[in-house]
Length: 386
Image (cartoon, rainbow, N blue to C red):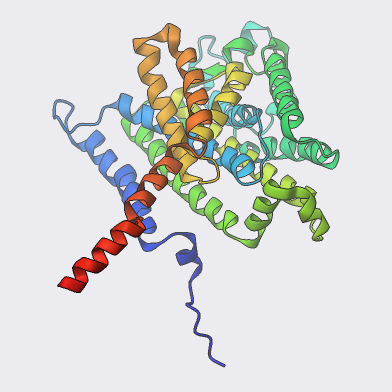
């Protein structure tokens, strides 16, 4: 018997042709157009994209990756984490260790040790700094450190069936504890100043326009690549189980699935994504310190997903761009009132836009496409007369 159902390839199931076209368009703008406008077009030209704009968009793309990570666990699995700022910072610190080793003798004290270690009269690197001068090792560290921590924490939390507001509080407490730990000078991570004054990356000066643009393009490729990978996960059987866990975890258990394995896998994967975002963030911004682990930062990450639209992936990235774009403006125009504005955004979205900005856009599109029965009747009469 011949199967008449339409056959779709894996790529077609991920996005429609229009969706792929938009993704490729965004990729072309970020990876081709922006480098040309920044590096080739002279600074006086109206089409020139400034270094400040490149740094700002690069930072927003890093935040977009983090928003993608929180949407996987909150939007699709129903796990509200208020600790993803920790995983982001750990990835940043891991890559920051390599960047500090790349300074070499160019520091203020002209020592092979970072300036903060010389100031504290340290004679050698602690054991956990070993091999951090190797780029390949640090790339592994960026993913392994947040991944292992998330796996251990998630295993005990999910096995104990901690969920809801209790899980959110525990993740926030964990983040706060690590922040206090990294503030201490004896931990070997620079105390409250953290890591800064980076000089080189892969022995190439990090302040050059070419290196800045390379980091920008790598971040754009990583954002689009992780978006496609995340889309593949949520549209698979694994993703459907995650959605079922979000909607009715008990029914999933009665159906023969163990939620622990699914929640732990997506939780760990989400933490690894945050670590990658942190590693891309640090060389572009030029600093990493314990303030990145503050509970307020983790709350803000959740707000990005809520503003853009939970459970949409693209909406989470959009929310990160909207909130941080507004933040860049309001922290300059009204620095004292920015936090009030952020709180107001969250309240308004919760009350009036439960599906976020992307949900509102889809609702408006649906209204335009929907024809009322009266309109259908009128159209039928007009066609009959014709």
